[in-house]
Image (cartoon, rainbow, N blue to C red; front, side, top):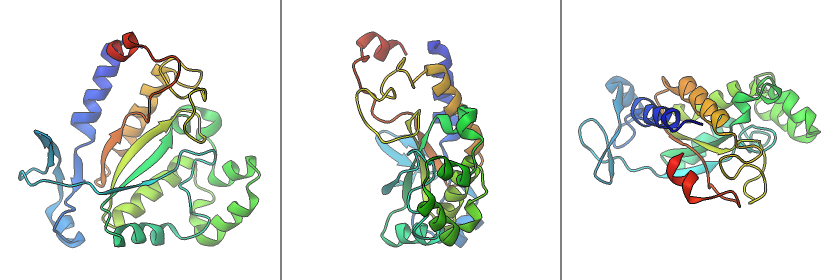
Length: 230
């Protein structure tokens, strides 16, 4: 992958996409809607809004990068109830994980939630989704992901999209093929394509405030040249 391509997409993500959010600190949801959206930026080591007020991110992790590619727990409780509990516990932000192949590999991206769970023989979990989140069953995986983001926004929660792995599955192992540039499941151009697709998809979503470009680079392929030149 060309360094210029990576720098371009990274700069776009950092400057053009990650900085739009509704006001979440010291204002109600109604006031936030009335105020419209603001732009987050950095001032020294602080994250600030357009008025220069410091914005503190208090985030919880919600995994959506495992084999089913659906946010964990939706077979147990309605998505709104989970989002509401996150807010009630004092968090204002969710780090929502996702696998690259969910948006770049047609054998994954074409799946509905039902198909994803059926292929893994997770029939009990699928029954739980039908009971607790019936509207998710026939959605394609990316649309289910969008619905989770939307529910978090309805509960005044900011979202950081975390590119956790390429191939969906548990993380992390030094030999899982997801660890470093050039690994079996970590082709840099595919990775950048996935970041670009997600950035495009969520660029206009007010409560999506950032993107973690990759989780835990690791493994035997690590070397100083790639670290400095990629």
